[in-house]
Amino acid sequence: MTDTPDVLRVRRAGADDFPVLERLWPMFRHDLSEVRGQLPDPDGTFRSDRLTAAFRDPGWAAYLALRGDRPAGFALVRALETPVRVLNAFFVVRGARRSGVGMTVVREVVAQHPGRWEIPFQDDNHTAARFWRRVAGELAGRDWTEEHRPVPGRPQSPPDTWISFTV
Image (cartoon, rainbow, N blue to C red):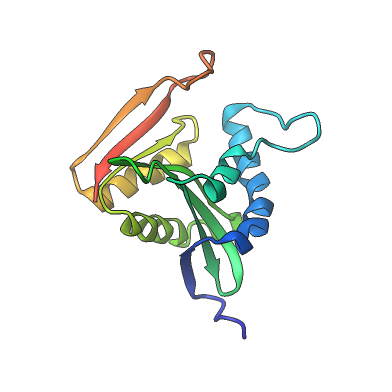
């Protein structure tokens, strides 16, 4: 049975979903490569240690967004065992962007783990920067902060922007 194509569901990803997220991962990393100026590894792949961690390590969770039976995006959350959760990776397939999918995914993921949240992004990714500031405003009103932090292990990179709020 196939779901209605316009119905969006967001659910925690299980081991059976790993291959789907593994196929979406290069699209996510490819999008980021434009902002970060990074090339794939010599074998043509992008590092995927964070994706693996989301399925292997305690304190991590992966979420899959489906429109009908088709993948529309994913979110990886880390630091679930700490007082502050981190939205570590977030991706919406280009064909589902600007349709409310991103905001729906964020709302549903954050609702699963109420408390303090931090979300990093790059200011050079103007679309993401606007999106994340809008998310903070919609989820926390005026009660959110923004700061720049150095990227660990990459002193040559511009700092990441981190927004923080409580839900």
